[in-house]
Image (cartoon, rainbow, N blue to C red; front, top):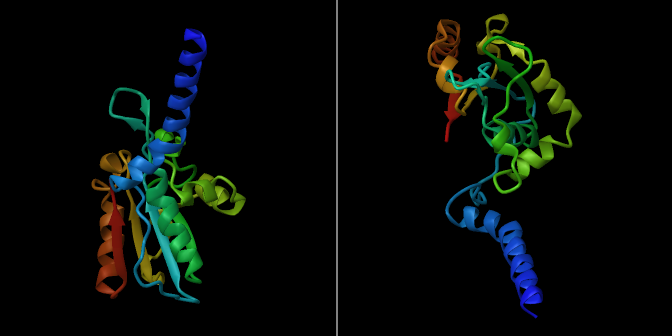
Length: 177
């Protein structure tokens, strides 16, 4: 009887964590549902810029862009009818914070990304920022994460590109947790 009770408690705890933890994190503000106005911008162009930095300091721990800080804006822009390009400081494969795709942290946009070969290809083959003209985009969006702390703020090329885009009246924004 005691073993059966322990088993029931263990199953209940696992179910609570599996179903309850994401809901509890949402209640505390993680990935809240957006209830504001939704805009369309067919024919517009957006550029998402991410880090190329893959390790947390000298610890060797894997890091990069935080998943939802890249995936959420990508799908907002795409669903608004915009063409969306993805770039990084050095170009090539963008490192993604591995913890950001854990089941209790993953946003709906992260789950969509994991089923989207087109977006995944853009992330694996990101454009190098120095090869782009930021003034050719309507929106430039900087995606955050721990990796961004190492190369976004110190990139002279990124600073110049954003300066030119801002001077040309482009929308420049970003996010970091």
